[in-house]
Structure formats: structure tokens, C-alpha cells
Image (cartoon, rainbow, N blue to C red):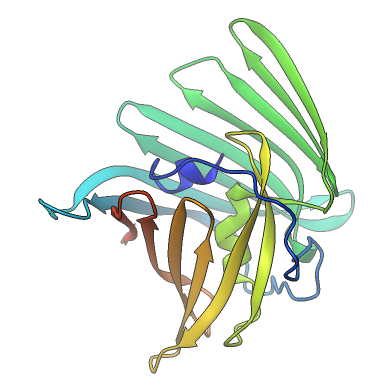
Amino acid sequence: MSSCVATALLCTAFTTPLPAQPVLAPSSHDITTSHIRADTGREYRYLSRAATGDTTEKERGRSRVTQQLVQHEGAPALLLITDLTFGARTFVDSALMLLSGLTPVREVSYIRPGTHVTRWEYAGVHVSGTFVTDSGTRKTQHTFDVPVFHFQELDLLIQSLPLTVGYERILPLYSEGTDVLEMDSVRVEARESSGVWRVRFADQAIISTYRIDGKTREIVGFDVVSRANGSRQRRVAIH
């Protein structure tokens, strides 16, 4: 799933050149995962509003996220399952990653109703995809300059960064929706008096602001602004 799906189609994905800033790699010691727990499912609403004119928020969709602690070849791993519904269609993604450094292993996604299924295999700098449609099967193979994460694990990655003001890295994010590598930026901007940390994520199309509870690492706020038109979106937990 690309960042477009994750932010309710506010954006499109872009390929960017390898930057001079530090690049965060899977298995980096900067990534802490002790906060990750099994979760039977959390539900969210996506609310959007235009930059000008009628600023009434409109619900664009809903999602459910489930986390299962599993093993992969004897190592602790996480199975992240996301159901994201917009209108009459539901995007379903199942992503397996090692807990150590949130290193991606494999991923399967499909959209229902429909018969299209996509599978990815991750091995450091190598990403292979298999796209099964009514027209047949198409495969892709990529070897990038750096080991990659993927967009489905972006929230977990943001939660797992060092909570230190000024911490900044480039995230090498493979975009499942567009089959390209994005080199996007993340920066820990501030700690609020409540103990909540503000983290900025940006690519060429959007700027996202995460608010992370300093004790639990829970995401307590998530807002997105489109660079193109200034429209905004936020994600709200359903209690």
C-alpha cells in the first residue's frame, strides 16, 4: 500500500534521489520495539476537510489494525493486518516483519470486491513483487541502493524512533502502490508539556504530524496536509 492509501488518497507517490542526510535502515539500533504488543484490533475514522470554503469535516473511510506476535525462522516477528475501507471497497493488507528493527519479510494485499492479489518479498535491498489480476500474472524485481522499509509499517516505525528533539532521518520507504522507492524525511520536533511528542513526516506530496505518547508510544494524534491544495485529514480512534 502506498502513502496515498494510508492518507485517504490525498497524495501520489514520488521517487526521490538518494539524499545526503542520514538514512535509517531496518535493524538499526535506533529502532526500539519493546512497546509493541499483540492487539486484537483498533479501529479508526478518517476525517477530511478542504483548505478553503466549506471546512466541515467529512468521513472518508475507516480502518481496523490488528497486531499478532509470531515467529519467523525462530526469530520474534510481527504480523500486521490492516483493513481499510473507502466507500464500497476495502483494502486488506497482511505484512510480516521481524521485531528486530522492523525488518520487512513479506506482504500480501488485495482489494475486495475483486480478484486482484499482490505479494511482495523483502530481503534487504531486494524487493520482488507478484501481481495477479484477471489478465494474468506480472512480476517485478528491484535492487535498491539501501535496505528498505515499506509504507504499511510507517506508523510502527514512527512510534519506534528515538524520542529526542532534533532527531532526524531519511526513511527509505518502498511504495507498494506505485512500485517505487521513496526517500522521505522524519524529524522529532518537540515535547509538549503533557509528555506527548510531536513528530513530522514529509514527502513531496504531504506533510504529516504525529503526536506520540512518551510513556506508551501510542499515537494519540495524526494529521495530514496536502502540499498541492492544502486540504487536511486526520485519523481518529473509535473507542
